[in-house]
Each structure stands twice: as structure tokens, then as C-alpha cells.
Amino acid sequence: MTQPVLEIANISKTFTLHNQGGVPIGVFDALDLSVGPGECVVLSGQSGAGKSTLMRAIYGNYLSEDGEIRVWDGEQYRDVRALEPRELHRLRKRAMGYVSQFLSVIPRVPTLTLVMEPMLERGETADEAETHARELLARLNLPERLWRLPPATFSGGEQQRVNIARGFAVSYPLMLLDEPTASLDAANKQVVIELIRERLAQGTAIVGIFHDQDVRDALGAREFDVAAISLAAA
Amino acid sequence: MHAEIETETPLLRVEKLSKHFGFLKAVNEVSFEVYPGEVLGVVGESGSGKTTLLQCLAGRISPTSGEVLFNDADDGEVNIHALTEPDRRRLRREAWGYVHQNPRDGLRRYTSAGGNIVEPLLNMGHRVYEDMRGKALDWMAQVELDTARIDDDPKRFSGGMQQRVQIARSLIHEPKIVYMDEPTGGLDVSVQARLLDTLRELVRTHSLSVVIVTHDLGVARLLADRLMVMRHGKVVEAGITDQVLDDPQDAYTQLLVSSVL
Image (cartoon, rainbow over all chains, first blue to last red):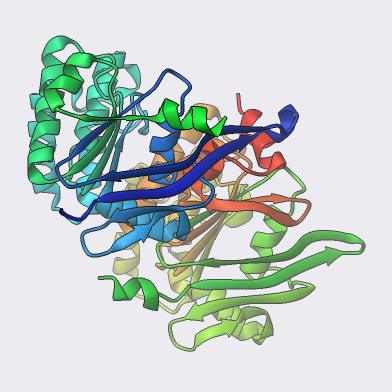
């Protein structure tokens, strides 16, 4: 068996809201998950089960307790939980892409620039980055007249496509996709499915949250039930 | 590639820094490091000790105890508060930049915008006039100021434009580290937003190392790689910016984050 890209061993997550009584709220406990290259894992479980929480913990956006979250960065495993902020930034830049369902980018920066940024940060030239950004935006059917505008005034679906273009601008060993198709029409949903399939074929490991059964089927994804682990924690 | 991670040396190392004013412990045993190319945000409400900390880092006031160690290109790590005043002044002029909240504190009112911007170069001994004017024009363009106004006095500029002059002035000598005290405070929201975009672009294109003090969590989210949350002179929480803001652990940080409109 090939080595996993992501290996989670025995992590737990508890929220403690100090200003609301300070009662600890357990989300999951002793969670294990391993995802190999070219594999797609879909997190399932009802709303509130902790799917997005797990995704954010992998990205280091949420803290977690105990255990390890090991990510292969192309040369070695790095434990997200043990990294200094600058090391985590570096791991994200080289090894982890994260696409959320909401526009997580700067609302006043032009669309084309936003999509080019991850490529520029990796050292691509402005010409290369712009060519690739244009291809992606065209593929996602975002009208060219919008490319020079900041996405603040775009519709939800348009903003989401900007987010996806930015998220898919560079290749990562691991991609985390939090409902990337949530507000897209059928045609654009198909484009995103194709983008994901291409990445899987290249060996990217994907962890996703997809509510549409047809998207899951199209990706041939393995299901990982976060709710079952949450129940065990409760 | 990876060897460099382990061999990286911090640009700034702060060891148990304290500054007391009488009985008030404005800064209380604060320790941290800043690495080259990192933007550290220091957040907390008014009176939490942020600005006092920044002034100690920039050698503007002396701490009561503790050390500020700056990695100088020539001499390696130096304890800036143990230096002689001329040596410290040299670092302040050549290696550091400082952006005040109020541009009037960082600009000369009766010197042209261009003159203000190039003054740090003059202080370092540059003398070629044509180079100077070219550099002033270049920096005016970088901070998105109208270059036609190079000879105007900054007092004729709006607050947002004055702040842009001050930012150009604090960066023109290519400082190793830039200290910023609420650089977008006191500006209208729309002016603030545009200035923030300019700052973000400058940080990215010049790989600046910055310590930025702000009470505005939106500013911190946009600019800082890493956050330190201060309360009553102490650091109550620190970490990568999005984690501190999205999953705060300390009661005070949770209150700060939940208070954002």
C-alpha cells in the first residue's frame, strides 16, 4: 500500500466557551483517518456533527487536542498540531489547499489578481500566473467582463467560482473542499467535478464535504462518518 | 529546502520584556520572536500595553527589565537597550521603519511630500539629488499617491494621503523590520479599506517583516501572519492569525472576537 498523504491519529476536539458558562462541548474524540494519494474521502454526518470542524482542524484553523495530524509535504510528514505559525503557513502554501463555500478572500482585490496570488506566492511569473488564471476563470464560466472587478458585488455562485479558481490555481498533495458545489448550477457543478477528478488522477488526496449524492457518486468517494465518532464522544 | 527551516534565525527576539510606570505593569514579562518576512499582529483593547511594547521594541523607550535582541546584519544579535545612544540611533535610521498612528507625528509639515519621503535616505548619507527625486516618485507610485503632487506640503493632503506619505517614508530605506502603530486608525472606513489593501500589497511584494499594533481585528486578519493577544500587559494568547480569530481559546480573546460587529 502506498503511503498516506494525510494521517490523523487519535485527535479530539472540544470547544469551551468561557463567556457562556464555560461548559466544554465535545465534538469528536479519538478520531483516526487516513487518506492516500488519489483518494477522495467524503465526510458525512448530519449538520452539526463536526464535519467542517474536522476539516478546519486538518488545516490548522481550529486547534485540536491530543494525537497527531500528519501531512505529507512532498518530502516529509509534518504534524499540523506541532508546527510553529510560520511552519504552518509554509505547509499550507506547499501542501494544503482549502476551498470553503464562502468567499474567504479580500473583497476589494480584482478577481484576476486573487486567482493569480497563490501562483505568484509559489514563484510563478506574472505572465504564467495570468495565463493560468484566465484559463481557470474561463473554464468556470465566469464572464470575462468580471475578471478585472473585485468580487464583493458578485452573486453567491460567482463568488464561489472565484474561490474555486483560486483554490485550484496550484496543485497541492492534499485538498480540503467544504461544499465547493453548494451554490452552483448543474453545468458549473460538472466543471468542478472534472477539476476534482483531474487532481485525483494526478495523485492529490481529497477530503471533502459534498451534500449532493450525484457529486459523491461522480467522484467515487469513500465515506467517513464523523457523526459515528461524535456519538462515541458523547 | 527543509534545512533552512531549522537554521532560520529570528530577526527579533524578545525576552521577558517588562515596562513599569510606577505600580502599573504596562508590559509584563512578554517574550516572542519575529522571523524574516513575518507579520506579527499585536491586538488587545486600549490600555493593554500594545503601544508601550512597540515603543520598547523600536528603542523609543527603555524597558524596566528584559531584553530586545535584534539581528543586525553587521554585528549579529544585539541587545538594543544595551547599545550606546548613537548605535541605537543608527539602527533606528537604517534598519527599522516606524509608522505612527497620526501621520503628523511622523512627518515634517513644512517639507514637501517628496522631501519627507526621501529624508531617511538623507539621514543615511545619500546625496545624489536626481536619484532622490526618482526614488520619491517611485515610492509615491507604490503607495498610490499622485506623483504630480511631489512638491506639495503634506499638510495640504487628506489624512489618508498623509498616511501614505508616512508609509513611503518608513519603507524607502528598505528597513529590516517595520513597526506600525494603528496605521489605519483615525481614518474613514473607506479610506482605511483602501490603505489596508495598499499595505497588504507592499507587505507581499517586499516580503516585509512587520510588527503591527492594532485594536481592529479586521486589520489583523488581513495583514498579520501571526497574532499575539495582550491584556493588562500580558500575552494571553498567540498563534496563527486565522486560528486565534476563528477558534480562540482564552476567555478574553473569545470576548474580543465575539464583540466584532
